[in-house]
Amino acid sequence: MKYVKLGASRLEVSCVCLGTMPMGGQHNAQDSERVLDCAIDLGINFFDTAEMYPIPIKADTCANTERVIGDWLAKHSRLRPEIIIASKIVGRGVKHIRGGAKPDGASIVQAVDDSLARLQTDYIDLFQIHWPSRAVPHFAKHWPGEINVERIDATHQSEDMLGLLRGLDKCVKAGKIRFCGLSNETPWGVNEYLRLAKLHDLPVMTSVQNEFSLLHTIDWPYMMEMCSLNNVAYLPWSPLAGGALSGKYMGGARPMGSRWMVSQRLGLFRDTPRGDAAIAAYVAVAERYDLTAAQLALAWVGQVDGVSSTILGATSEEQLRENIDAFNMPLSSECIVDITGVLKNHPLTF
Image 1 (cartoon, rainbow, N blue to C red):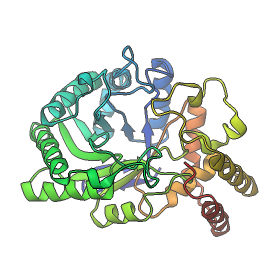
Image 2: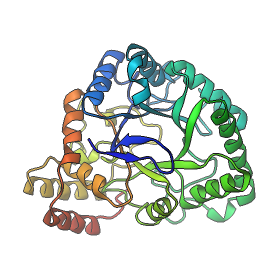
Image 3: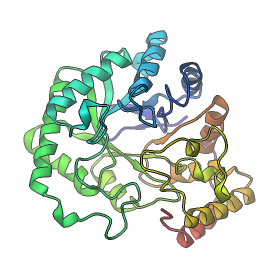
């Protein structure tokens, strides 16, 4: 396992971060703990969760993922100094958490305290803002006409960001969180947080996690250039496009127990004819180089210039081991040329 510095922080994290979104929901506590144990055995020291997990969001399971991780941590307390735990405060609109209200400085403090209790720990290594309060071009909203950027009030947004930074500052000074980060942000958003932090002597955002995969490359190169030049770690999530790049959903297939058989809050927006054609082409490339389609997609993300640590999930120990193997499989120059050819023919499939 390779380890990298997390942006401007002092944290050394594995180049693979285990996403825990299904734990405590689709995956029961026992199966989840086996995957967590396997991750440790494979050298992963970076675990990402959120107060709203598991997905899909339900009133009776909301925040269960943190509880599962907390119970696991309690059994492995000796490992806590070596483990990097990242969690997130939910954005506006999730009615099961604080009535769906927009997060502010006070709710940052409350969310941190609640997460600490569930995680059974004294501190969170990386605490992130799950998504902005303004309309942003994520989740297939990046096409012209999807959002109206001229209606965004920059002054009002900056005031909201400043309030969140002040809440984070209280938690940092109290020793409850070590470093701060963002999720589902844009270059303007990241830059504004950095500007406000410098102007008001508040915590600097050390990372941003956004969706990035062979089917969805909108952050290259502009977001990644901005992050790299400002020492902000870029953490891709959904590098398999919700599992689609494994090829298991090709032609409308829906394997029992798979994620696409579960109700999705934002629908199956990754399921498009363009995506099916691209996935078929990537599967063919993978077969040409004796790789699985998932390994090809993960290995490609891992070698993209500007990527720090890739967030991936796993439904079993076997799947986690297969996915981790991808990061020890350097792609040949010929393979990268073939992948680039498919990417150029099938850009942004959803």
